[in-house]
Image 1 (tube, rainbow, N blue to C red):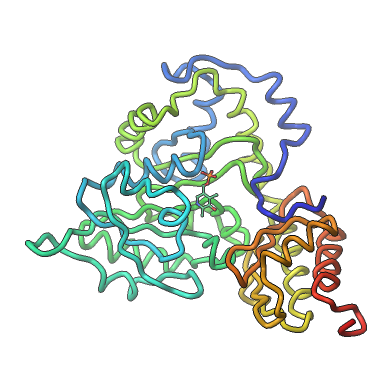
Image 2 (image 1 turned 90 degrees about the vertical axis):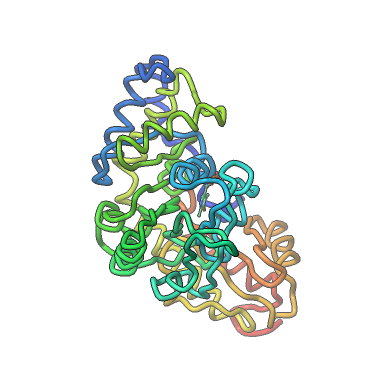
Length: 348
Ligand SMILES: *Cc1c(COP(=O)(O)O)cnc(C)c1O
């Protein structure tokens, strides 16, 4: 099977498995796991922040990131299709007691002029804004990248009004690869960043939260409350260290493969995808004009050995990663053409 459902499906490579077998461990709830401690300090260093916290999932990292900055009854400004709102089981409401105040931006690239009008002060009529959340890259907008200047403008505007900024940077290393800059540059002004080790970076499990030492100290307590106080977690952190140090440099390959899929899909009659808007490793194609529902296309692809998720009734998503080759991406495009009743020579 050629698995293009997500970059979460990546499996730990030989170096990670070797590191896991040999990891030095201790009880991380006592902060005595040397490998977890090393991962946390390296993550902080790479992002130019004071401290880091290893968490089991990105969802827990975002949940804690939102909680540490807000109080019950506040609003969190985020993009309408953001992960924190749509794919985290309403944790900002359930755990932090906050409501989402959405802004809609088709490209997923949110700018300060969209956020500024949604900021609310304390009043007898409305809930005050507690936090601004930015998703970079933006998953459901097709892995689009918010540039450094736009992130900085949001941070400057929010900070001027006393508001913190959290970045859902699940794939922020992909953003850095696209921009040809460092994650440190992209996140210099944000207060906290969550990023995933377990997606394009290929670790089996784990995400990180980074920020100030004081914020991470409080975040550690919320991690324990949520059941994320893992004991000899060094076995996981050892793979995480390899993901962090070695894997960002190969993400360009995934982006080139995504371009190949985008260009191939764009050539299929009825498929709408603008390769110029495919910044990273996510390709979301609109197939409405083919007359085939995205779910049906997904089923037909599966019969042809290709896995891809329908993300709406009319849109199908392909995500490239280290466990799919260029040739497999080309096979996926050919299978899509066949599944939609098109051959290289035109419609069947
Ligand atoms: C995957 C993802 C997360 C976290 O997901 P987990 O499965 O909980 O690790 C958060 N934000 C975005 C944008 C994601 O794509």
